[in-house]
Length: 129
Length: 331
Ligand code: HEM
Image 1 (cartoon, each protein chain N blue to C red):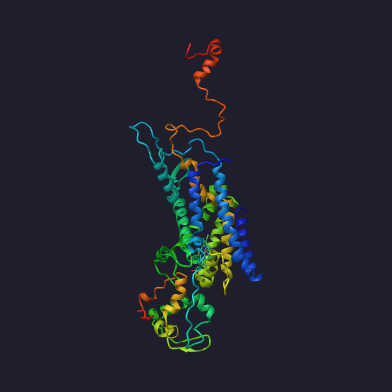
Image 2: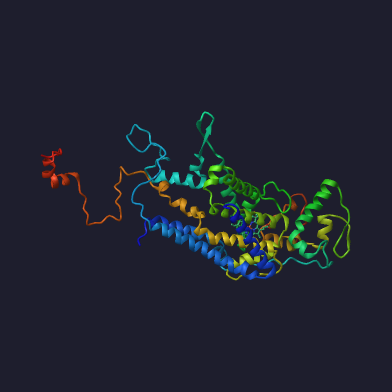
């Protein structure tokens, strides 16, 4: 059966197929590196279990941010294993163990294309290497 | 029933994915096999459908003319609504595809006491239709961050723009809210407006419910239940590089979300959703009204049947015509 207007329909279909397969040809077989966040050496447990931290740490950080900035509550927190931390604080709390933003936070954030705006208020510690 | 059955169908799809993953442990089937199958059906089915359409000749010019046609020099032509050139048609098509111009002209008719028939402009369908399609587009483009190993800059820009107000963590996307609201409007329009309800079929409700369910599971996944995005991205990039791995903990809600998307992709080429391809191919929009400038020949004309002009006809039948007192041009 003859087809009509193929001079217009064929380019259209090629554009369609090109757009739909974007991830395939853009990656062209290269899956990229899987993130390997650097684990702290000075502690075994975080303030919540790992599963929770992997999916929901941002919620916790947001709660702490609101508690500290809006209500002035820097109260101590206990972790899953009962260890106490002095205060809700990014620089003086979290980053005591997770010392490097580059080697810890950014690993996954870059991979997942997430750009948290921590350093719009906090001054990011200078990291050599 | 026409509303209820498609609703139950979507609930059943959710249940199938939930049971399949949670009870039967078929992560690989729902995370790898179905996505590949559905994607192949979507792209292959879409192309097959369009090629099927390409087999229909459209020999005559049938554009809907919504304005003054090209005529004498002193009569102004409406170049967009009755285009006679390539560029006129291009303008008309671009405005149609990207701004839904013909929906913008939507009117409604109402009968008031009297009885009096009143026509008025009705822009809601245009507005929510446009919001729905663009938020859908933005969401799908944003999802590409999960499928490409190295995320290109324009995706970062889109992300930042969509989460402009920096509400909460994870950041709230405006497109998510607009998407659900607009899809809800499109559903309520079919339900509440008696005229539209009368002509609405299960095939109209099913895609709406399916798309809403995709949106709702996605939103649940991001803001409420939360999932391990790194593990999911490993799977998604794996799919795009033909080396899929299911690694670590991935929430069931993700498999429900993806199964609904698979259903949508597989269903797409067989449904009214093919208007995505069809809008480009509607002859009532994409043809120039140039019948008075160009002779269009019907491709299925039998070449053995020669044109028969009136002069020839008269030559052939002159005797009988004059005999029957029918006036002839040549004596
Ligand atoms: C028709 C296609 C799809 C639609 C309309 C859709 C819709 C949504 C929506 C509205 C959200 C909420 C957050 C956001 O807007 O990013 C979402 C989240 C999500 N979707 Fe989809 N989705 C689609 C396809 C897919 C596919 C194929 C995958 C497979 C990888 C997927 C995986 C996810 C994930 C992992 C999230 C959570 C993202 C996060 O937590 O940041 N979606 N989806």
